Image (cartoon, rainbow, N blue to C red; front, side, top):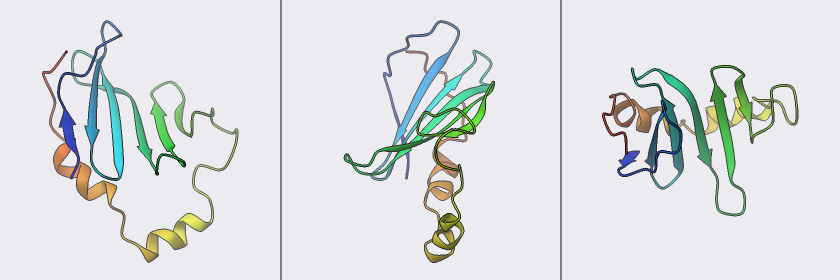
Amino acid sequence: MLKEIEGVRQDEPGRARRWFHDDDFDLFVWQSPTGEVLMFQLCYGGASSDRALVWREDLGFFHDGEPPGAGEPLLPMRSAAASRARPPRFPQRCATSCSGRSTNTR
């Protein structure tokens, strides 16, 4: 299950950065002072194959830091078969860990 890492350095005034971690995922979330999600990065893969799914309010979704339309498709054809072969782990882990708002602004 994803657990929130406390004491995350805050570099951008007006945005709170939160970090959630488990054995398979790192989730970074940037929020406005009112708790609105402004951006997130879902990082996964081993050290030699790190990948990231990113969403920004101004650009939408993209993969591995490439803007929409560049690089590989966001959902490659093989992903449908892979999702049937193994249940997704992220939704269950995030359901309880990521749902609450944090007042942590460190």
